Length: 440
Image (tube, rainbow, N blue to C red; front, side, top):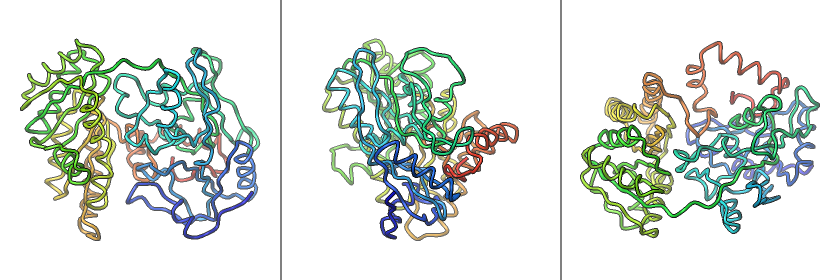
């Protein structure tokens, strides 16, 4: 096993994109290219009691791939093979380092579609998406990563010898033999083993969608439009919220010709004429300053491209602390109001994007570089946003994972009894506590 020990290389592999999550100093890193390579690494680490921190592209936003002192970073980004595309059975088998968009392109060539589409899809890997149970723009109608994972191969320990490759799940559409260990590993952030192969469900390519855009004078009004649309039973493929600060940051960076003239914009993809008409009506009834419906795919892609670019555009303005709370859809207006209040109370600049249709909000807390007081204020606002989500019946994370930034919030959300059950599962499957320790 050839280990990477160069300090500069290790520094780049020791953290993800979570700006303020702590990161330790790895003992070394290793870039496997096969399941056998991973098995060798896990056996080595188990024998030496060395922690293992798996990572993909490092696009995570919660510190889930951050190194701990003395660990081996297992960089899976070289495991990039699309092993199989089975058009007749609507499935694909991939290694964990396959980039989400690359899988989409590969299956699209056969008239198929892999729906999970996080904003990081041009860069994030399927293994990383599995680790956090990533969602994305289309999850409102089509579900999240867990809904598309039929089976996994994972290198595990505990009940089996450390370094054993275990096959979980199946290739069939249905199957209930045994516990659903596949779903257990999806979202486990590498704390129960290292995923080395993923079998995913595919869909036929979707029909072209209409785009419906609504502009609103307040964030709360946009939230009320979301609640109205979902209350009326509309099922758009995507329903996204972007506020003025996000749109302005993208325009200042990329000059796409977007002129943000209101406080918030809703972007929706409607796959039926009924949903498109219903969204226009809901936006109008909620007090939209204006609303438009378009079948122009170029225009639509420009708007959704702007939505995907919000995080890197805002990153240019200063260190970001990224939230990922999710609340019941009826509580979206109340949560947006709380975010505005929390920002004003702490003196913190907050820009907000959201998968508004399913209640998953991403407030982005922006601080000036090197301003320690602003950093402390932002961290206090971060915790208040989490508490506000809890009070409205929500959760600490909808899709970014727990990592390091959300661990305390997760414990508060679960409560002592449920957390004890989680710890028991971890102890049973990883008694040496070498798989991504400190992240569960």
